[in-house]
Amino acid sequence: MSTEGSADNAVLKEILEGLKAMRLENSQLASAIDKINGRVNVLAGVKQVKDEAATDAVNGSLSTEKAKEADSAQTVEAVSQQYEPTSPNAEAPPRRASVSKTSKIILTSYPGQSGVDPLPMEWGAKDPAVRGPVVVSRHNNTIRRRNAIGAHGGSYSIYNALAVASKNLDITHKPDFTNTEPAANIGPFPQWNDKKKIVAMDPYGHLAPWLYKETMDKEDVEIRPTIAITRAHMKLPEMEESVRLGRIVPDGKICINETGEVAVTKVAVEPVWYLPGVAERFNIDEGTLRRTLFEETGGSYPELITRHDIKLFLPPIGGLTVYIFGDPAKMSDPNGRLALRVHDECNGSDVFGSDICTCRPYLTFGIEEAVKEAQQGGSGVVIYFRKEGRALGEVTKYLVYNARKRGEDRASEYFKRTENIAGVKDMRFQALMPDILHWLGITKIDRMLSMSNMKHDAIVDQGIPIHERVPIPDEMIPADSRVEIDAKIQAGYFTTGTVMSMEELANVKGRGWEDIDH
Image 1 (cartoon, rainbow, N blue to C red):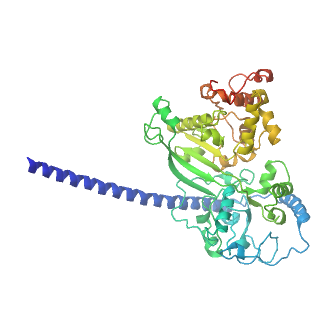
Image 2 (image 1 turned 45 degrees about the horizontal axis):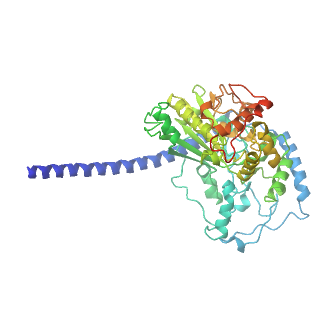
Image 3 (image 1 turned 120 degrees about the horizontal axis):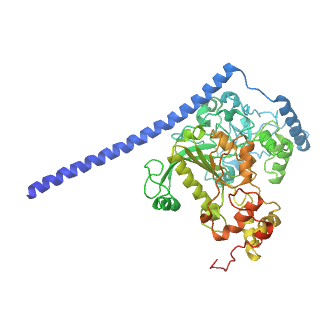
């Protein structure tokens, strides 16, 4: 009997070892397939872009707006002349050493300056070769070819400077983009080639190193992506509760399991501003925009004034993240349904659960509804913008909280508290927000999971119809956030309920700091 048992154990052990080996082989195979898929996505994306450009070239060239651009150039040049020195033909910038402090300090550059030769940039051109890459690096062989002002990384560009200054980062380092290809293929869409529809991001930003590889090799310039696409799993306690309560049913594909784990495609986007287009969105001239950006950032970017020939600016601000539930290809399908939430960052609520506002509850509600739409064969999208505290910042936000809680925290005074401190109610300025929708190929929204009139109007003004607006359910509104939501509804937020008068708003009060029962 013992001999038979030993034999059985040996057989079981052999089977287990075989299973382990198979699992390892499958894992290695999956990894290899994923790498191939990444390269296929890049090749497919690059091929689609070039094929569409070739088709367009056969059918006729792109129309231009030369007269309007000439007028804009005149206003920009007028501003630049106010700051231009008597001798703009300064010597060419020297090659940068690996330690920046040993190089001559270059305060700015000028068009036509010796050694300055920016790569061509024709924003809105359908052919990527004609459009050209976004080049902002200050590497030795790249600095003279720059066609954009600013730096990569948005607000993190300052940390990059600290890394160089402290010698933790060699200034000559060039990224190795092996296996970094997009995890999903998005576009190209006609909106990518409309210079009025996309002005705040580079539509080719996810393909840049591969699309412009020949330029990188031939010109020896550094070109970086400003968009990255990956895949991940999302785990939120609210989603687990949704599964437990039966609102979400795991399907093994979108909602993966009983813990509410969700498969998601994520897109990170850094801002790239086409200055003439940004100015037009705000109904101001380009010269005014450039001068104000220069002066209100403490003179941080003098090329905004001296380089009127450069039309691109990579601002030092936060970007955005897109969370796509379901097949990314379905977002642009005019026959498929789309549920969308556009959400502006609120660290206190989104991350740490503060109940003074509806931000996290509305965010998680948006995610749940997006997942449901994807499970029903449509598409669900949540877009998360880095615009903390209505883009006023967290310090201003907390000062407003103090003013509210030390006074009578009434809904009728909600916006006044902010205006007293910041001088303005809101600085999110949704005019640039719809660009990401154009980039995703979205042409209509079936269910808009937002009550914001500003977001609604900005999207509709860009030619994207919204069929249904979905408010946050009353049961998800924390008691202390009634001040916020009731004030916003009275100011124009969408509601299926009643809109209070200012007299009624005066009776809506928030919780005091010491009020633990409210």
